Length: 265
Figure 1: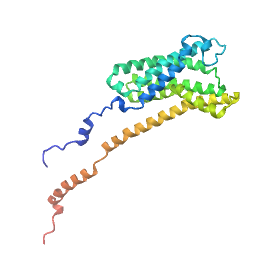
Figure 2: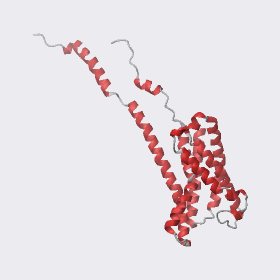
Figure 3: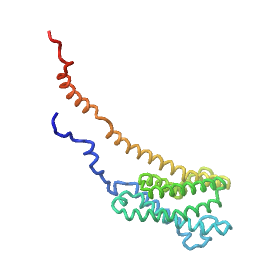
Figure 4: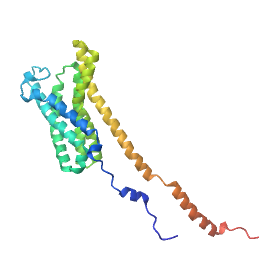
């Protein structure tokens, strides 16, 4: 056998850095940012004056409701902007300090969003169906955000990203809710019947976060599957190379062995 080392193709392949896609190769970030900005332009102005009379929804007599609603809306607006920055891969790779500070601000804003949302959820316009939907939404949002924070504190970056994607999917349900409400009202209450309108609001609230969460889970499952396939290919034994090597080594050894010689006549 020669002393020439055999090159390790797998090691050479793994040493190559993964190509970084430019920001314009992520086409989803642009419509996401546009949708977020458009929603904020629509939702924020009625609450800037802090006057309950300008609220887009009816304000109940409970004194705690309107302050909780305003805090929930203002903190949620900042949080949504931070979420767009968090989900931008180009910004995360090229400007890591901005990514980290926007992540910290997201976590800080999530606290008043969580508590304010739970308070507002107890005064539903869509009846008990909407109340249960918004309460579960708030609890799931708080849980996923807390788990994402714990993961990053423990340096489990992969788990952190997955939990924060779920957190954003739940947080962005407020944007999707406007679309689902229009659809459900058109189907269940085309003539503005009170019972149909209440049912439409409740069903739209469920659809807004359940569908978002399903999409997030499907995307995470697909991404993890893509990452596992190259790993399995790298770890798979190279049967053609190993068989050829074994043939090259086995034939000389067999010829030299005493049991391989032909009986003498």
